[in-house]
Image 1: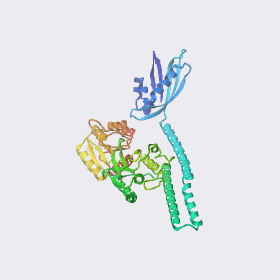
Image 2: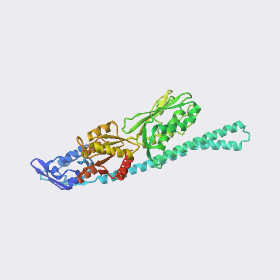
Image 3: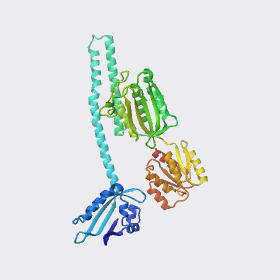
Image 4: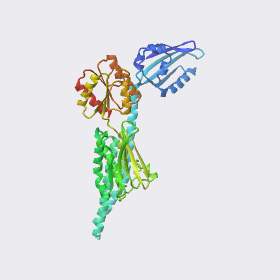
Length: 480
């Protein structure tokens, strides 16, 4: 896109913009010619001050006739566009700018490729660091159990004077060392697979209470042996959308850890609450055990420190369990924190993504709202269908309880479908809540506008139910 500015009195005013300006910015050339500051108005706020400073330097430098800038603008539909602006200026004998010639290129694709390359390099570095840490753990931590196993095995084979009691004791030592080594190897392999992406990450919708009950069953033998009660206070109405196996492993490790450090006759409690982060639930695994010294809390989740200590019955651990839990939770976009008072107990608080059980249907027509809500009930049996009559009501409902999917009519009173999507984008909710447009009246321009906003599925009524069902299933999977 080409443009020129010319001096008129004390001002530099636009004299030409090529028609390609509309393709890059969404604004027609006439608006740029009418408003000399429009281009400055659409510069991204985070880039504005730097651009202003660099332009001021060009304006004041008598001997500089050209420059090049890369910055972001926000186009008419609210999307961020990266541009490269090459400027040449013509000055008079006093160095004052008389004319500006500009060439603007859309470099958004190039910038995205650049970011992907940076991310790829960061991932490779992370993999290399993981390899180094893995080798360090193998060379150091696996040596001790092997030394113990070989040492006691040699004694059993070579010392004929050993009593039966001593032999039994040495075999017990070998067994303990072997278990310790196996736990360490399993934890390291799981941790490394997570780091390198070798574990399949397959989110699905499941009941949180049922998964926790399954986890309790896994550790119940140890808990029963120690007379530790595990209380599950999570209601059966909560559903998660996460990798079920990884989530189970996280709960297993946390519950096993809680039982390990809880004294006989005490209890472990599991609760859930709403999280401050949208679309997440906050879980708590709380014990009344020995607690953690303040100086050791920062070591809990670090693979480098692998902090561990003996349980109340002398149980040993690899020191990698909580590092693995942290990796699993962060893999789901959640966070984990710990509160502990030495001698009184510990509480792990962590978040997992919640599976919304609602689809929001937005349609002003009572008859069609009733018809399509019945259609949705039949093709999405696991979801409740909420209905509202316009975009404003939809926004209010979404802010109270975000749905898994929004299906909206285009033409509506108060707030239409286009403005509803625009508001979702501005509030950051569009990333987590997919939208399908199901409308009776829309032209090609309207479809293009929705497409620019990132809407993939736009259907005309009456809709082909097979295509509609496929779009809903894909959207729900993406949402979660």
